[in-house]
Structures are given as C-alpha cells and as structure tokens.
Length: 232
Image (tube, rainbow, N blue to C red):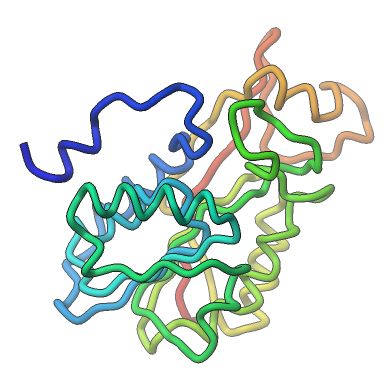
C-alpha cells in the first residue's frame, strides 16, 4: 500500500475538513494536467484537509506551498502530508489569501474557496466559516482574483472551483482587467444539503435572481465549475 492509498482509509463523518464534491472536481482537473517539470512550483490557497496539495504532489509538482487562514486547517494538512511522507516538498503558511506569498510566483495556483452566498454556518460538522462567502458569495473570491496575476509565472495557470451562484460574468470581468481569461474545464450539478438549500431564497421568488440553480421537487441543485485561468 503506497502513501496515496493510505489516504483512502475511512475518516470520521464529523471531520471539519472532509473533502467535498468541489474538491473532487478540482482533483479530477489536476489529474489531467500535462506533466510538470521537476522544478515546478504550485500553490493552493485554502488548503483545508491538504488533500489537494497531496494530489499536486502525486501529479509531479516539485515544490508546493499551501496557505490557510485557519490554524486547524494547517494542522490537518500537516498531519495528512506527514502521513503521506510529503512534508519535505511542502511549505504551509497561516494567513489570509495572498498575504504569506508576497513576491512569489507559481506555475500553478489552485483554490477551492468559500463561495456560498451566506454568512450563516451551513454545516454543524464544519468550521463556522466553511463555504460561507458573505452575502454575495465573493468575500474571499474577489481578493483572490485581484492578486492572481501577480502570482502567476509566465505561462502559469490557475485552476479554481466556481459556484455559478456567484456569477461567472463578474469573475470573467475581474480576470480580464488583469489580462487573464478563463474557460470552464469541468461542470456538474451538486445537490445542496437541506440546511444549505434553506439559506437561499425559495424557488419561484422573483427577487431570487440566482443563476445556476435547478429545483426538482424538494431537491435543489447548484451548478459547479472548475475554471482554467491563464493570461490572454
């Protein structure tokens, strides 16, 4: 059993950093990247469990840097990376978005950020800020996008998850202002848990104005993407 296989052992259902469907989409996109050179540098903003950093290591990125604003996330990522014997290739920093990475550039930047449009906790088993992106869902996304171009090497890429609720058009406009463009690599519909679905306006209300929602009887789905971002 190699180190990656060890990570598939069962984890408690109350794990506050349990990977989500968005994490799975991001990992899938990473697995289909071209082979990186041995000295390639990759960074993740919002490491959570550390599983995406592990996926980057598995894909062949030589030097990895992870950032998270929650000490518990740094500890969780450290534990996973140590278990997989990857700590020698990774550097973890506590801080908000780009603050720990001033002046640094990367071949690849990845992020699965809180972006659900609410300030209310959406899952009692998660940290209170899990998935909460503020009233419009963009509280973390917009600062991330604003600093992205400065942290990409020439020819560098970014892969990010993006909930359709927060508006793909706004994201494209913010990227274009920095000379960046994006395409949707992957898209799926994610079932919203009842608590999370209840934080959104009821279906059929004219003021809802939220893109990317699909209601089927009592079930509510939201459109989720992985965006590939590069210089125009």
